[in-house]
Image 1: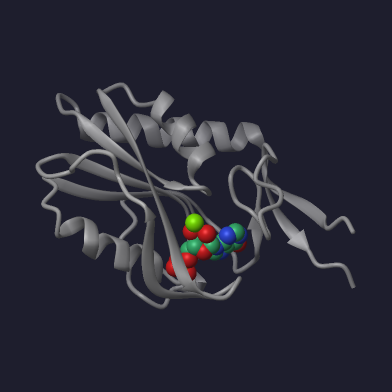
Image 2: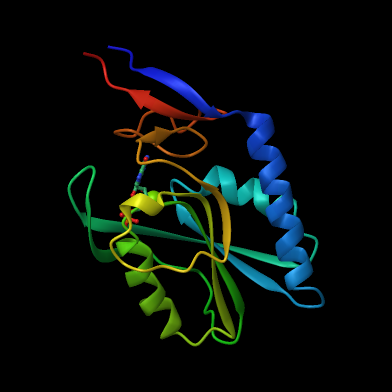
Length: 175
Ligand code: IMP
Ligand code: MG
């Protein structure tokens, strides 16, 4: 059965905001190199587009984490399913995530990454649901604040579906 999906941000709007974030990061890190950590799988589309808009040298690495919990609620205890290829000690790290919801996953992951001794550690998220926050998380580069709705597309999934949509949309549950 097909779910109904209402467009929240179309491709052009996303592209424009991602370009702005890339420019902001490029300014902040002028004369330096950065390491982007793309959080798989959700942030993959965003991280690729963002990296293309950054004008300082970028190292690109991936991490896959799974948070113990059910489909819609993360427990905050994060298991590293796939770790980085390279150490981050002394590096300027920007974690790129798709969405911050309760904030539990990033709070926990940041503790792990901080213990590895990066020179700096920042968070960039395409989307943010401030109403859902349980654990405080500082988002250094935030794409959009969104209402408490379940969204898909541009890397985000609903039961592994809809990642490939070129826009962000709200899933309208069928009655
Ligand atoms: P947090 O630990 O509650 O902040 O969980 C954040 C993670 O939950 C994100 O990385 C997504 O994988 C998932 N998530 C939260 N809200 C949504 C949504 O609206 N659509 C798709 N995935 C979501
Ligand atoms: Mg995720």
